Length: 398
Image (cartoon, rainbow, N blue to C red; front, side, top):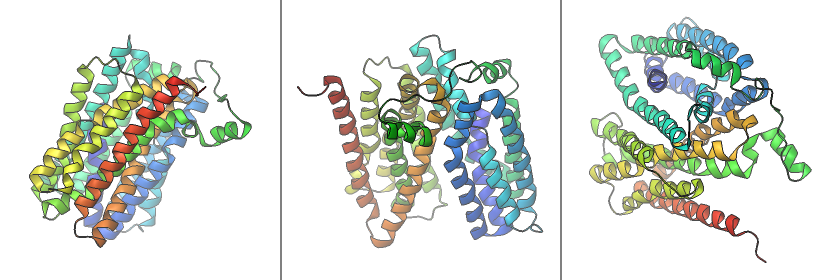
């Protein structure tokens, strides 16, 4: 699991650096943008295939196609004799074909865990390992570049991605999960049977579980958190007053993951009695409120401390979201529902970094503006979640 997360964090960075060296910065940006956009937009649909046809019919073919197209991409990207269209097409197909293994693994935790606390611990371990991967991935790329250059780093990271995709299928427990773990393979109904009006039923059939209020309530905070840290992608270099490649900037980006690891360990060890919705609201507030001081002071030291404090809620928010999915979403859509968690964050990140870039163009005090905006939106969302739960609990007024 750690190998998958490290390679997943290292590969995009190695890809971008190697593509910049061989194809130029503009081409590297295009390749990366296509890969991220296609992967993000198709993730729920790839997971829906698993829900509809079963793991054993989908995961293995997806893995084979993904490995083949990734290998083609690696060979053609570094060989400038091939037109740029060839590696772009290869990475687009690879992104479409990549199996939603994270969704499969996370949907299994409630089967493996013997009680709610064990399930929470498994989700916590999963999310903590992911954060550690984000810390170790760039380090791996740096070591490989020092050892043999960007091309070697890219090829090695691609090979690790392929190896991790194969090795995860080899354990007996995973083979059993792929054979027996889906609603199709277990003989349960695949089609959703939502209540409500005919129009709502058609909408849910077309859009999937994201059309339900249960899933929207879960992923909205993640969308907002993605927007917040997307904005920080611009705020951090502005606040450090240095180019993006300086050690100060790198340390500030690492502060978020550091807080995430600490918060994940703490959340896993706590025995909480509050509802998942209240936890989601509280964690949403914790993500945004530490950034309020950006309005007054956004120097590197202050920003680093605020990012660590804000990061304390990052991993717990992911953990709580997956626990809410297990509790609120039916089994026949669980893979697609799981896939929406990272997708919501990634969409929010894209929106946030785009908005922050525009703000930085038109104002000299972008950090203060963005800090106030994100803190206010986060606070309003946290309060709305609490109010929504209270209204649901009290029922309609007499």
